[in-house]
Each structure stands twice: as structure tokens, then as C-alpha cells.
Amino acid sequence: MALDSARDMSLSRTAMKAELLDAETELRLAYAWRDERCEKSLHRLITAYMRLAISMASKFKRYGAPMNDLIQEAGLGLMKAADKFDPDRGVRFSTYAVWWIKASIQDYVMRNWSMVRTGSTSSQKSLFFNMRRVQARLERESAAAGGVLDRHQLRQMISTEIGVPLHDVEMMEGRLSGSDYSLNATQSTEDEGREWIDVLEDDSAQAAENVEHQHDTEQLRAWLLQAMCDLNERERFIVRERKLREQPRTLESLGQELSLSKERVRQLEAAAFGKMRKSLENQSREVHHFLL
Image (cartoon, rainbow, N blue to C red; front, side):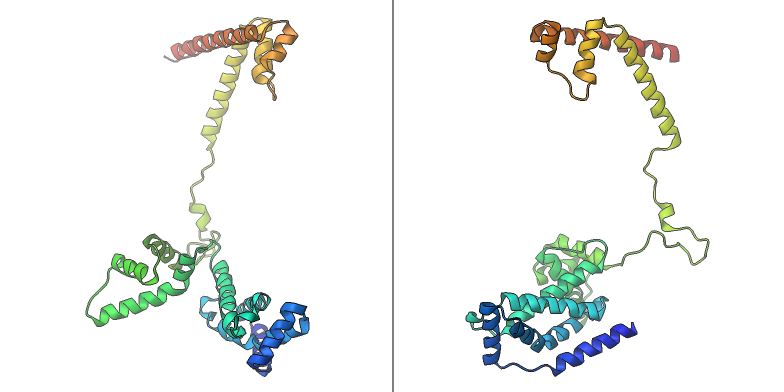
């Protein structure tokens, strides 16, 4: 932490010592970078406005991100602005760069606020950075007028004020209400306290279910084998080739091998399935009768 603070101070001091560019010099540097890709001109332009990037980064410290990381993101936004700046538009570079710096910092803050992605749409982004400020103002105004807002009224007013859907306000309110917690954290301060992960329901099959499933599978396999034994050799061959192969054969290929028409193979297949169905029904009735 001390090293980070020292690095922040060093960056700030370096930025404050950088030259201040007048409009003419700024324009000349911008043209040199855009038209000639002069890296010295780019470096001079970036260095001159690094103090702006640091100033903007400091406004986002309340979101808990390290100041050094915020400054790095602000610097990336500044470089993107320099790369996309068009000096022919007659706008000062600082005015243009502000939007790129702010966007870069905001994206970083939202990416690192929570393990769960906080939001990606423009309305969610606007809510993330403005909802608490707008909420506090609305509550102050209501208190000054002698009224009290319930949660639903407050959400509706925030939705109208920021210009976003009500369901986005409700979603963002829930996400901003708490931070991430480890499932391996203990439920109490005691060393032997149970971890939160221990109270999660186990969705995997229990031992009794596994035994029952295995028994049913073995029973079904036995019935199918018995049903196959009730077929003649040609019918068993057709069933194996049509249903038990990884890549089932076509009626046409079986017909060529058996010297039969495709339609005749289809009829034999249907007859075989009919026999197997009848065999399975008889076996299941016998088991049901035995259980009764």
C-alpha cells in the first residue's frame, strides 16, 4: 500500500511538471501524430494532458479501486483519445479526451466491482454511477417537503430522473446493496465454524437413487436381451444394424446385403420392433403380477 501511494505521488508530481500546451502547439502535435505517426509528438501530447487523466481518476477512488490502477486506465483512455482525435474538427484535445478517459475508468470500475458482471448497457452504466447520488437528493428533497418516500416510489422517481426502465433500477439496487462473499468463509468467528458452502443443497444423485437407477438399468437391459432372443436371426441382424450401431445403416444398404428390396427391409424392421414391444409388455406384466 505504501509503495502504491508513493507511486501515485510520483506520477502526480511528474504530471504537474509537464508543459501546458497552447491551442496552436496542441494542433501541431495532433497533426504530426495523425498524418506522420510521429511518436515524439504523441508522447508530448499525452504527457501534457496526463494531469487531466489523474484528476479524473481521483474522482473514482470512492469505488474502492486502487488509485494506481485508476490512473493506468485513465492513461489508456487518454491514448485512445489521441489515436482517434481529428484536429480538423476545431475542438480542443482536452475537451475530446475527457469522454474517452471517463469511459475507460468507468469500464474498469464496473469490471472490477463484482465477480458478477454489474452491467453492460448504457442505462445500467448510468445507474451504476448516478443512482446513489440521485437517490440521496430525492430523499433530501422529500424530507425537506415533510414527506416520506417508500421504496417503490423512490425507484419510480429514480427511473424517471435518470431515464432508465424501472426493472433496471430494481436490478441495480440489489447488486449495489452488497459485496461478494467467499463460500469458504465461516458462518461464525469460531475456528470450527461451518462454511457457507456446507449449507448449499447437493443436487447430485443420492446413494439410494444411484442404486435404484442401476437396478432399473440392469432390469431393462435384461428385458431387451430377452426381447432380442425372441427374434429370428435376420430380424436381430436388422435391429442391430439399424439401432445399435454408432452410425446406423440405411435400409438400402441392408437390402443390398440381404438381397431384399428397401421396402421389404422396412417391413421386417417394423415386424421385429412389434415382436420386441410385445415381449417387453409381457415381461413387465409378469413383474407387476409378481410384485402384487
